[in-house]
Every structure is written in structure tokens, then in C-alpha cells.
Image (cartoon, rainbow, N blue to C red; front, side, top):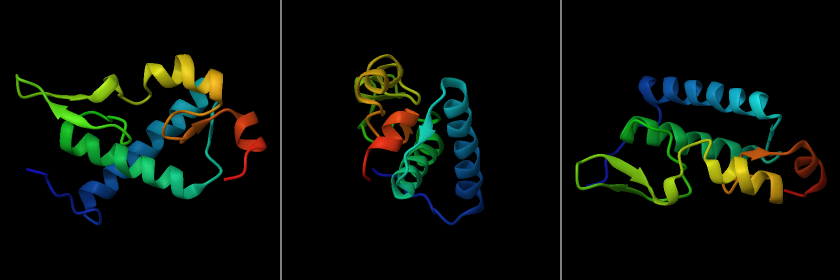
Length: 113
């Protein structure tokens, strides 16, 4: 059964703030920038915060999360933010991660959103 989260609750808003700080830290650590499209950033950050509250990890919101046989959760394709696929392949080769929240400065400057 799908759990419901009140996105206006103090708990969710606090988790959103923590997740924003988390994504700020990732950008700074790797030299990335946010997507110029604020709607993309807000949607991904909301999804990460929701997954953190539901599953205890910031699973990528663009991929399904499944319950394992032992009652824990895992993301399809092992996508926990920042995922290795993004750091090792997507961002260096394409200029952005699959979700689009993390971009190279060049990609953000040269693409219409």
C-alpha cells in the first residue's frame, strides 16, 4: 500500500530543507550546478525528500523503489543520490544526471530548458 505524506507538514518541510542542503553540498563537492529549470530542481528535491521519509534513503525519484524479501527497500538500478551512474557516466558524458538536477556548468549554460 502506498504511504501518504502531507507535503505541507512541518516534518516534510524540514526534510525538504535538509535535502536542499544535501543537493547544495553535492553541487559544491563535484563542481556541478543546478538545472536552470527551477521546476526540475523542485520536483527532484521533493522526490528525494519523500523517499527519505518513506524509505530512509534518498533514492532517485525517477526510478522505482521495491521492497526486498527481507523487508528493506532498494531502488531499481541501485539509484541512491548521488548515484554512481550519474557521477561516473551520465554527467561526464551527457552533462547532467538522469533526473536533471545536477548539471555541469557548461551543460546548464548551453541548453534551453
